[in-house]
Length: 564
Ligand SMILES: Cc1ncc(C[n+]2csc(CCOP(=O)(O)OP(=O)(O)O)c2C)c(N)n1
Ligand SMILES: [Mg+2]
Image (cartoon, rainbow, N blue to C red; front, side, top):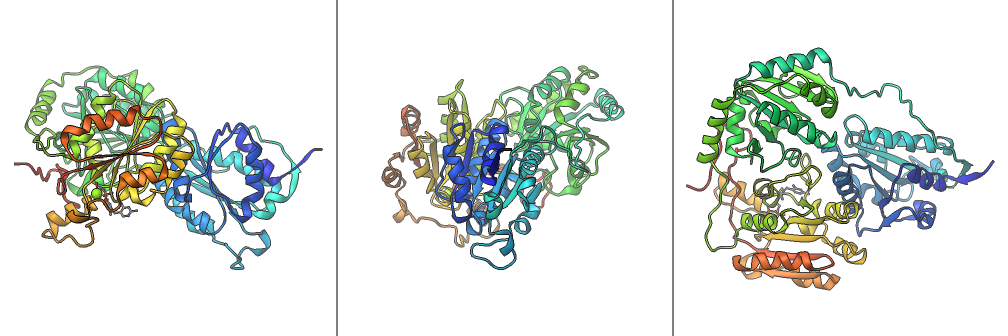
C-alpha cells in the first residue's frame, strides 16, 4: 500500500477534478500543501497580492469558463481575507471551492496563533462547508465539495484543513461517485407544470421573458433564444442575465429594474404573463414589490425551490434546470399574434431610448460605446467594478454571448472587477478582457497590477475617473440636496491622486491618460495592441448620472429620466 500525505491527496484530488488554475497565497499552516502544488505541472498556480483577489480571480475564472474556481489561503488573516470573495460568489451562485488552512486539530478553539473559525464565519455565505478532521475523509470531502459547488444552484464550498491533516499519511483513492444524503437537485421540471405554462403562453397577449443568471449557469442560452424566436416573446434580462440573449436582437429589451431601460420596466408593468427563468426577483429588479408586474400571471423556472415565491407570489412554479425545462417547453409552444404588444414596445423604445448628452465633452457612456465598437466581432469579456461604471456598462454595452460579462451583482463588491478580469483572462486566454472601472473601486485591489504584469495577464483597465464615489454621489445629489458627504475622492486640483498612469508604469504596465473625447478611440486601440496589461485613465465629466433610475423602494413605474 502506497501511503501519501494529506497535502498530496489535496493536489491529486484537484488534478482528478481537472483543475488547471489555482489562485492562492501561502502561510504557515499550508506550507506542506504549497510544497506539493509547486511540483504539480498540470496546475498553474497564480500568486495574487491579496487573498481577496485570489477569491475574486477564482470567481472570474468560473464565470468566464463555467468551471469550478479554486482559491487557497492560510489560516486566520489569509482565510478571513477570502470572506468578501466567497460572499460575492455566493450571492451570484458561482461555483467555487475555497480551501483554507487551519491550526492543528488539537489547538482548535484555543485562540491559537492565526486561528479563525472559518466554518462559523462563512456559514451563511457558503453553499456548504467542511472541517476535515481525519485524513481518511479528505479525498471524499474534496469530491463532494466540487460536486456540491457545480450542481443544482451552484455556489462556493469551503474546505477547512488543519495542518496536521495535511501532514498525516494514508492511501489515495479518489471516489468515483458521490452520495450525499439529502442533496438531490431536481433537473427535470414537472411535465404538467410545463404544459400549464405552454397553455398560458398560448393565451397571453403581453408575455415577457424575465431572464436571470441561472440561464447562463445552466448553459441554456440556445434554448432560451429558440423559445423567444419561436414565440416572439420579448426578453428582458437581469444584470446577472446579460449575455444570455443577444443584446442587439430586436426582441431584447435590455436590463430591467433600478437602472434598467424604461421600455423593459414598462413592459413588466403592463405584461399579462411574466416568465421568470433563473432569476430571483431581487429588490433591485422588482422595486416596490406590491406594485411589481401588477397585471401578470407569474411563472418561475428555477432549480432552487427556495427562490420560488420568496419575494413574489408565483402562479406557475417549475422547479428544474433551465436548460432541461426549456428544451421540454420548446416542444409545446408556437407563435401567437403579439403584434399589438410588439407595437407598444416599439413605441416605448422610441419614446424612452437610452441616451446621454452627445456633445464634445468626455462622457463615460461614450467610452463604453467605443469599447464595444472597436472590439465588435472579436471575443471580448467585460468585467466591471461597482457603481456608475457598472450600470453604464449594463446600459451601453450590448452583450451578445453568455459568459462574456463578469460583474458582482448580488453583493455589489467594489474591487471585484480587476482580479475577476485576471481570472477570466486566464480561463479565456484568447479573449480581449476589459475591466471597466471606477476610480474608487479600482483602488480596492490595485495591487493586482503586480500579478497582471508578472504573470503576463494582458487585462485592459478602463477607469471612468470622475473623482467621486460616483454612484453614492448621485444618490446624494438626488436625495440629499447635493451634500457630498465623504464621496469626493479628488477635488479638481488633485485630479491625479493617485496618478494612475504613473502608478501603472511603476508596476511595469502601460498607462494611458485620456482627457478629451477625440482621444478615446486611439487609446482603446493602443491598449488592445499592447501585449501586456494596460491602465487607461479616462478623465470623464464629474457629475454625469445614470438614468433611468428607480429610486430605492419605489415602484418600477416611477422612473427618473434625467435629460429633459
Ligand atoms: C466594498 C464596497 N464598499 C462600498 C460600497 C458602496 N458603494 C457602491 S458604489 C460606490 C462608489 C463607487 O465609486 P467608483 O468606483 O469611483 O465608481 P463610480 O460610481 O464613480 O463609477 C460605493 C462606495 C460597495 N459597493 N462595495
Ligand atoms: Mg468614481
